[in-house]
Image 1 (tube, rainbow, N blue to C red):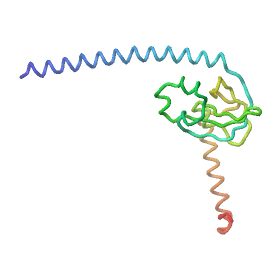
Image 2: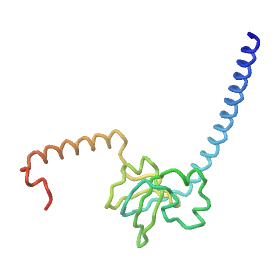
Image 3: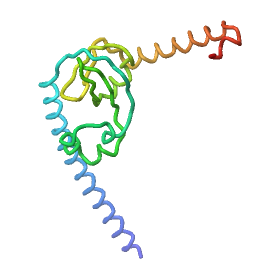
Image 4: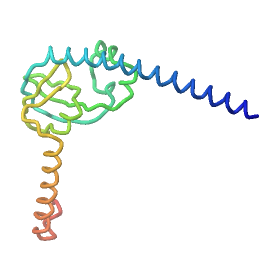
Length: 159
């Protein structure tokens, strides 16, 4: 009986060691691939002034990208909701994929200078950090609350 428990524990330890080894090499491979992609993004980065029409998080398949672009997207990326920005670049209206940090800072219905690599918004000029954005949101809530309290009750409703 004691020998049986010892065998099960050894097999479980062996499976755990093999699993950790596999994850280590997969992580190393994914890190190299991510570094190559980041180098490509940095090579093709350009500053462009855009007018942000709308921004939302949605599946990339419903964004309306051309078939050639949609075929290159990995299967898992098609299932995940990604930050999408509808913007006017010159005379053309386009849907762009956006970095998560930039997505939070992008204002709607304003002209902004952004850094684009293909159809991917990489950065924004004058972008604030997460802490600065949190302070701005907190100040807006505070100002909005005081302004709403100073109005008469009947002016709070739209006609």
